[in-house]
Image (cartoon, rainbow, N blue to C red):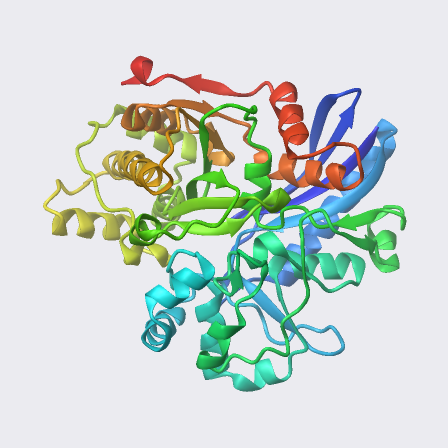
Length: 481
């Protein structure tokens, strides 16, 4: 069987998964999984790209061993990551500085200054992207303002998956789905929104070529082949390099269904698929984002805080000696009083790491809600509030698009949270179809297969997922409310 290696990097963990099609059947195998976190240095919050790269190499090595034992041929590899984060390369292709992580607090003041210079209306109507301080436009503005010599020394600006594609293949290119998260691209043209950059003093000489998902960049560099045991004939192909783009590509929806998607993980991204960018008054008022998807589709969606709230609570409790895993926390939450405390998940303080239980308690107090006093109440508050945020977002999305979405396809690691799935069905009044859990890796691998002619189009890809994944669970609102 010919297989494709999906390197899937989330903001908290990464994995290397082999994806293959044989006689119309879908196969996938996890070869390597690892954790990673940004590192707080005196210069800010940075990604440890050396550690991530070493884990990718280890994952490819384990995949090569697995494929050899199984008698499979590895045809290609592609990388997807979280959105917005970027890095600079000089003329020799070396990193210029360590990439900052999107939650670095330095971005806030530069977001405010950029809005003063450009206006929300101009930025949103040009890019169609939700206004958030984490976006690349503001972190790049921060670097230009604080460390202009770094940008002056750069020959290329690329995003995180582009960096790893470059290290794999030696070819420099920016993939379109990841670029579209930056708030520096016009989704109508697929090119850089250059008119936004000049007023912020952002030079345009480092802007690299933007290529679509499914682009063949080249083959593995010889040293990567030697390190991993992979053949030097293995192709490097851009998937939907933004993890949500790959996840949405693998939504197991069939033609004719009235569906939307909820990609659930560190972030929750609730949206629908459109043929064109939508920036009408309803979309701007609710701050929906228009990111480019696989096959030129527009991912019309809203970023919601997601399971980051629970992840940060768990990290805080671990630091205090309470070793509760996610399964235990969910069981505690299930036994807690429902809808006791509902808070606004868009609160800006939730975007920065640290002290999450205290932040949740503080916001509950400010909103006149009962303050969570135990881990059970805190996690239940987070999950109930997320389900309520999904309800509100779905209502606004239907008003903006004029559509009605009878089904929510819930994909990603968060789809394993049975309690949140039930709360989502009850809150929205919609049928929730949870799974596949590894939608991002599946979408990544199958876009590679599509690029190599094993699949005909996006609909064919989704049919393969629909037919090949058996882990899906259906939640009907009348059964869970």
